[in-house]
Length: 197
Image (cartoon, rainbow, N blue to C red; front, top):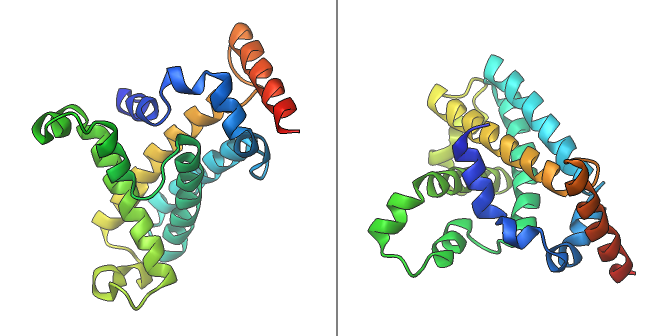
């Protein structure tokens, strides 16, 4: 796992925020009940890794569309857990609105690039739902073999997202972590479940 991915995860899920009872209590329905809760994150991560593997071997529309569907589903869950509403790029810019543009773009270039790539995947998925919009820009989606640059962008973005999903899974799964960490997560989880009842 790269330093870049760990930094991206840290921006989405600041340590001081997600290790609080308040956060777990607010998000327990997502963590626990979203088609299996944290286990759903693990399943999405495994599916994403598998689909990217086959897509890299054969970058055709069938494999590419499967990568897009799994990636955008996983990103939707990550966005919800991170508290992102609306455009993720604007959400991130507002988070650091006190910085001038030059400083902002220099210090958070990796995160900005990741959010731009995730936004492009969402745009492609939107195009698939409404193909009459942006047909010239995205008609390659219907080609049997996808252009190498488009296929590479999608595969690389999905790979990075897979790492973020796996970090989230490990963070929210009450079955993972060191012994002391595990018991703390279990306690936060149990209290949040009691509050939810």
